Amino acid sequence: MPTSQRSFAQALLANPDARPDALLSRIAHKHAALGVSEDQYTIVHKYLFRAIGDVLGEAVTPEVAGAWDEVYWLMAGALIAQEARLYQEAQVDPRKPWRQWTVVERREETPDVASFLLRPADDGPLPRARAGQYVSVRVLMPDGIHQTRPYTLSNAPGDRLRRITVNRVASVADAPEGEVSNQLHRTVRVGDELTLSAPFGDVVLDDSDAPLVLVSAGIGCTPMAGMLEHLAATGSSRPVWVLHADRTPADHALRAETVRLVEQLSDARAEFWYERDATEGPGSPTGLMDLDGLGLPADADVYLCGSLPFMRAVRTQLLQAGVPTRHIRYEVFGPDLWLTHAEG
Image (cartoon, helix red, strand yellow):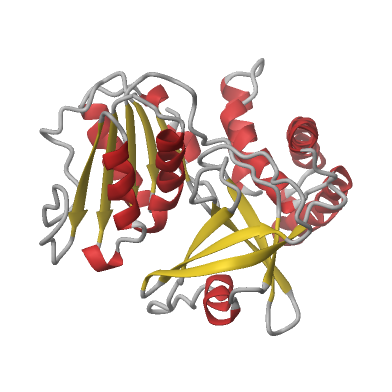
């Protein structure tokens, strides 16, 4: 049984009268960014339960099958309702979720990171977006198969252009290279078109006067860049800490832009950590991120984006500094295996 359904079932057992809203919201936004429609739940049910029977055999008694069937449709019903609302709010027809965008500029941010600035190919209005949201990019691969990957909008949602910033995922040990990211880096140039979904995602910058802490590592800087640009564009006066960890200054995508945006804000500061070559820029110690001594306010709203090990380590430091769990929000691209534990 998929991890999300096991988590949903565990939540129901713990509190039968409630629904795990955080889990459902995260999944619903990802489904909407892929154009998932109501009828597809019936198809998934058919093949999922056939696969369960094939793998587990006689262990799937009628009682077991009936229980999991009930869990599946409870979860599916809740997701269908949420996704219908998301499509309506985004003014998206789930039967036609994709739109063509023209690349008007390509920027090489680092040797492995490129930004693509985009405008609608039909010159129509930009869909509504919030700082921190992402779009799905649907790419035709050399083998003729379409693959889809999510990429954060790395600029302010109110701009006349939209930007995605793509990290080229290299092959490491037994792990293959990232097919979509490498295809984008190799082939996409100014004038080309990309197929995008509308923006979705529930980890968004809220309107608030509370202190704000943006914590990222590696390409996790992209939602933070969009949030920072939005804060600068709206003349925000809220206190802001920008904390980022990377391998070297040269690997730090959007670094100069981050410094510029921090300088535009009336009450913002930046601290960068580098594993090596930490010789320049604002507060750039060598080593892993260490929040000790920064004096982060306990009432801050905190946003995390980076690898799971990084976010777990930083979350532990934040909790030790007195920041409540409910104030810590995070984004994970890929299977979200941390949610159940992080919400505890």
